[in-house]
Every structure is written in C-alpha cells, then in structure tokens.
Image 1: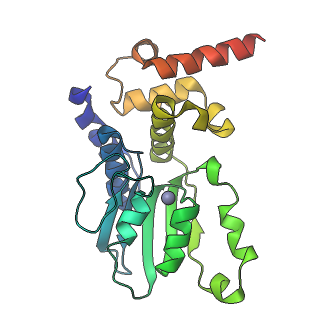
Image 2: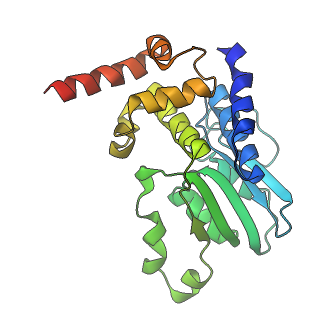
Length: 225
Ligand SMILES: [Zn+2]
C-alpha cells in the first residue's frame, strides 16, 4: 500500500484546478494515511497567501503545538482556525476538502472568517447552511459566506476518500447520497489516484478491502430484491 501513496499526490497535482486546492487535498490524503478522517484545510489572506493549514488528526496523539489531536474535535478546519490570533478575518478564505460540519461552521463564525469554500458535499450536515436564518441579525450579518460544493475530479476524489474512510471505520455513517454513488466510479477514482495499485477498476475491486466488497455485495443483493 505504501508504494502507491506517492501516486495519489501525483494525481492531485495533475488535476487541472485552481492551485489553492492542491494543498488541502494533499493534507486530506495525509490524514487518510495516518488513519484520521480525510479532510484538509488551508486559510489564505486577501492576497492569497497561506496564513494557516490544518488537517484532521482524530487518531493522532503527536500534533503540532496548539492543535487538537486524538479527539473527535480534531477537525481540519478547527486545527487551521486554532492558529489564528483573535482578530477579524473578514477578507480571508478557508479552503476545505469537505463541507464544514456544525462544529466548524460555528468556529468559522467565531473566528470571523469571511468565506469558506469546500470541494465535496457532506450530506450528513445538510441543513447547516440554513442555520443563519435561525439566528439574530447581528450573527447573520457576519456569518461566514459558504461556497460549494464544487464539481470535478478533485471534488469526486475528496468525496471518495471520505466514503473509503467510512467503509473501513464506520460503514453505518455512509449516507444515502454516498450509497447512490456508483461503486465503479468510487473505485475508479481511488484507483486512478493510486489508492488501489491496480491496472483496472475490476482488479481494484478484487483487491479492495473487505468493507468495500461487503458494500458491493449489499448493493448487489438489494438490486436483486
Ligand atoms: Zn468539522
């Protein structure tokens, strides 16, 4: 498996996308390889310069100073935001590979970051974007703008990474939307990125971990009902 990892980075760098997305994707990949949940985040200032980066570290006990690790709270966005001194960041943008959850959406507002852009949808958090409608005018006025999900190969790649992680660690968390993703699309995306070191999607399926095969079998038995 380790010999295939550099090709995932080559894949990320080969995709024609705004370059500010490459580092969040590489961070998401790094999280996956450590066993943490695959999400990466980068904060840029108005000039486009990077001011903080973070990635999910939920199962890592050794972390950079000031960041969260070995806790369910160790989200990528939290670890990037935690590095910002407490002033306003209305002209800053946080780039993240997955739709921000309720925790990180709140943290973005608390840290007064102007905008968040995300690649892949997270159906688990459908409805978070509507939260400002429940809040005071003051909270609503300074709520972080939310841009996403985006489309294209890296958005699919980031969604596939999260589905891959859920299948291995918490299969019950795979959402209906993600179950609707064609399995062959999911596997082909991961194969192209080098997660599965195989010449074809069929070979990748044959070598996929047991959870992925169980998922395929469940789909097959459902379609035969
Ligand atoms: Zn989060």
